[in-house]
Amino acid sequence: MEFHKELDARGLNCPLPILKAKKALAEMETGEVLKIVATDSGSVRDFQAFAKQTGNALLAHSQNGYEFTFLMRRK
Image (cartoon, rainbow, N blue to C red; front, side):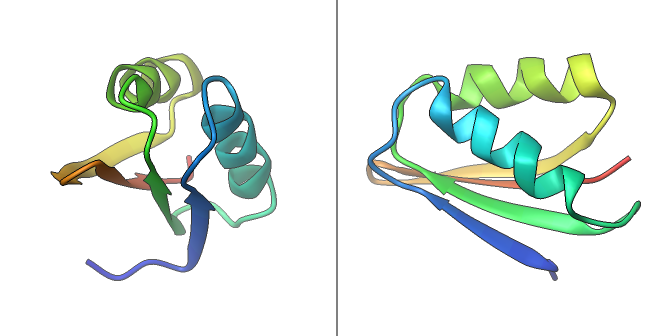
């Protein structure tokens, strides 16, 4: 899937991946997609909750080894 901006949150623990994603999304236009790569195992749960709370759409998430990739569309 195509994305407009990428955030490398590898090595960061909760809540830093969420905080950095929130800041990145705030700098983007409505409808743009942010790709986030994180290594925090709690990030799957965190990004699902973040999407529900903020209204930004969690389009997809996947896991490759210890890396988690998320695609979020700004509301």
